[in-house]
Amino acid sequence: MKRLISTVLVASLGGLIALTANDIIRSKSGKVKQNTLSGSVAPVTLTNYGNAIGSGVNTDFTMAAEKSLNAVVHIKTTAERANNLSYDPFAEWFFGYRNNPQPYVQQGSGSGVIISGDGYIVTNNHVIQGADKIEVVLNDKRSYIAEVVGTDPNTDVALIKISEKELPYLNYGNSDMVKIGEWVLAVGNPFNLNSTVTAGIISAKGRNNILAGKSNPVESFLQTDAAVNPGNSGGALVNTNGELIGINTAIASNNGSYQGYSFAIPVNIVKKIVSDLSEFGAVQRAYLGISIRDIDAKFAEDANLKLLKGVYVNGLTNGGSAEDAGIEIGDVITKIQDVPVSSVSELQEQISKYRPGDKINVAVVRNNKDLNILTTLKSLDNTTSIVKRSEVKRSSIASLGAAFEDVNPDELSKLRLQNGVKVAKLSDGRLYRAGIKEGFIITSIDKKKIGSFNDLEKILTAKTAGEGVLIEGVYPNGMRAYVGFGM
Image 1 (cartoon, rainbow, N blue to C red):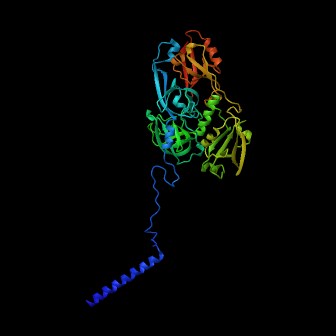
Image 2 (image 1 turned 180 degrees about the vertical axis):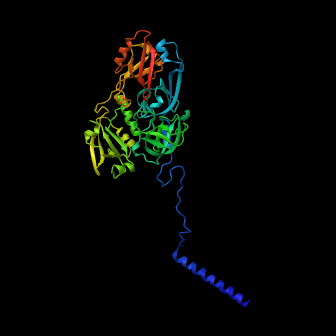
Image 3 (image 1 turned 45 degrees about the vertical axis):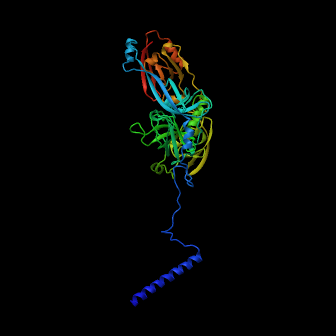
């Protein structure tokens, strides 16, 4: 018992001494240091859906959505089409006009973006192409009939206008400054669901091969994973500041609906096209006058190139902008006006922002040396002249029910045509009932070349009643067609 009591007393005395020493130390130091590995608590920042304090990232989309909704419109189109299922133009050629195909009304739907308070609206060309009537419905349900100011199939941009003032509109952003990973909103009317907003990020820039079936399109699309579906075409792609950075145009899909990949025309391209259409009625397209290709590792090795950046100059057009400026085959173009270009689509995007006659700096690498070459841009026919709107002329032959216009040199070149006259407008008449659609380019009548409206009028006015006519021509997608009918 004595040993046990002694042990307990010694233990108690030791504990008392330890506690006393600890109190003395605490009173002197004023604080206790914690073990930083096991006892410390890391700083915590709340990351709610709004602005996270100190995060530096704006993920609150409400302001951008409010700006966009009232500036994005619903576009409804109607077009009367001939039902040619039972129509045989060759039978009419031999036996005369014998049947009257019943027309039907084709309806379409898309979106558009108001870009000025006085009623100018930008949309896709494919949204309004061939329409007889274009109805614009605002977010507040007001409805207007729009007129077409101009279109550009090569970029799939169209400009229309309604008669109204003090409309809400979107300000232009700068698509050159858009970064991959940046938050964006897609605003439009998918599946006729009015005023729909979806969110995503910029997935890639400079995408091409999107406008299938177009001849020599200008493509450098913004790719986004914001949900875009049929009906979104022509709608707005905006940044978190509510600025317009693109026009939603297409999706990559196996089933026709959204599967995660959508594409928008960069607003810097749109701005220039809209400016040309409103000022001149036609796009003023400039060319460098070169053939180019992208650079990959294999080509760089074969061509003895040290850098995998820029665009390689494969060839030059005689008398073109590049040849006149001193650009040479084998040069690698790295910048246009201080904007880096690393692919063919990016170079096309930058050149598309200028007009014939504009002077630009082209940065090239030649024999491993950096050069800046001042270049005066030219049109496709190597001039600096401005292209004017084609005059639409209605045929004096009322039974044709058609108006015509000259084909611009750009379109003739892309379709590899030497001549032709375009069908600009159609009403009920011989051409319409024969199945010809607006945009058709007549290249010959009865095997005689048609180079102007006067050529067309001269041949057709010489025809007698009941005499056959054989028309040959090409559609804007390159499809050739032969149509026969009786006068």
